[in-house]
Image 1 (tube, rainbow, N blue to C red):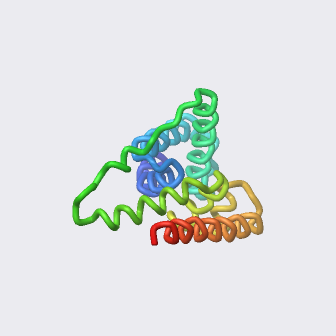
Image 2: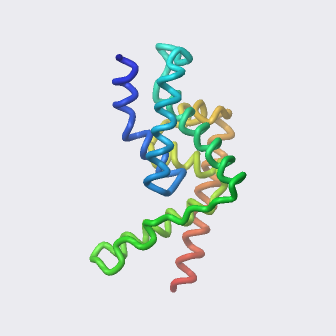
Image 3: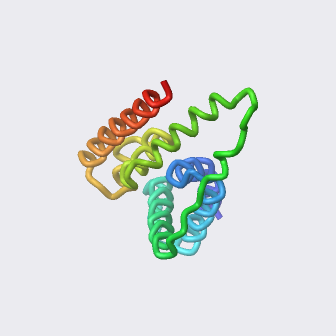
Length: 163
């Protein structure tokens, strides 16, 4: 029962990470649900004394990889329904900026999106993010640097096209 409560306490962070890699509210919720189901059915694989959040983020990451592979096989693309929300209201400009950032992040590679989601969106320490992604710390820092550069370039290209 303690594990279930600890996993429940992580739900907001898991959802935030899932949103950062899926860009779709419903897909993120589905991804978190799949991850929680996997964690609960495989609870014996978690080692008490280790970081539960890292274990759960790794499960979310692996579930997303499975989903992407499945979608590729089905050749289905889902357009984010958020693109049509908030048209004409006072928050439209802020919403457009957020959509531009989400669009730019969506153009990054899968590896770069995961690093951005864990470190910049969720605020996971580098060491923990490296463990979640199962990569060396040096690889994480170089991926993050390249992801930031690519994101900055995509956003500045978009700003130049607007202006």
